[in-house]
Length: 361
Image (cartoon, rainbow, N blue to C red; front, top):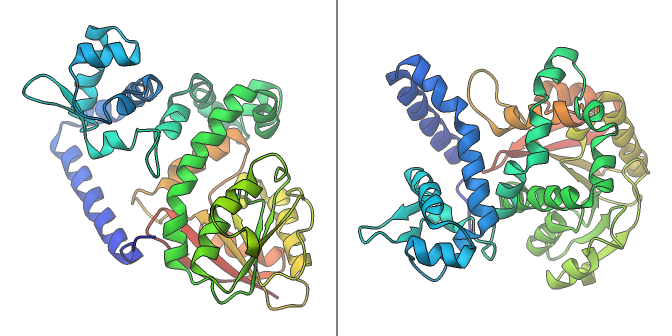
């Protein structure tokens, strides 16, 4: 895996970018600066259209004229030009002097065949169901409750299970974002100190595989209710860690297997309101028992004050979908204490996600 810059360097760069963005907005008349932000949803739909049409894949072998590109992706040439003209103004594609369009680094991230592809994520962000969910954000703000169960007549997880087409879109889109977090996590935290690492509800095991790759003397236990159907066995074998990793079928509200030196839960606790988050954490505490194991939560932790952070956006998404939240260090400290843990440290990474380390008490 390639090396990443230290988190403090990333935070400094993010601060500079944020400052420049704020300066740009302050230099524009306030109504126009606000209008530009409000129109961001239209840019999302333009990116979604390009992703659905597989424009980036069509341009992978080199620049094409609009007519050539339209023929390859099955689009109306003039309409496609108008779409690409907009996206080129955001540096997603570029229009060359000869009139042909080509990929930029951001455009390449929309290809389906590249590492850390954002195509599936872009399709999720522009999907009509996703947009319908967000159209009811104001209901959650007014009521303090998740709006999706009222909209769909069922909870978010049940809806995703019963609506296979959107469930696949959601899973692939979230997976695309999750892949980008593995390298920052394993670069920011030393997992090699643990002999046995239990990944609780870890899906296919992407994070666990990344950890074991860097910790050759550690063993892993992947726990998930879908391990017999989600391709976990094949994934771990392809990653070359299957010989050091066992797989168990258990649900989120079950007690995980005992005997682990570290229990990792990635983007799990933030999905649930307090009483259910506590149930999950207390079950992990039971599995650790009187041992010296560690609990490692991988979650986004909002920055204080007015500085931007992805957690502040995802927090609203959780609010309207499931009634969950992104928690501050203080909130995690209180929650963990109720579950029998003491918060030791929040380890920042080069991404928006942090590693929240806690010990049993």
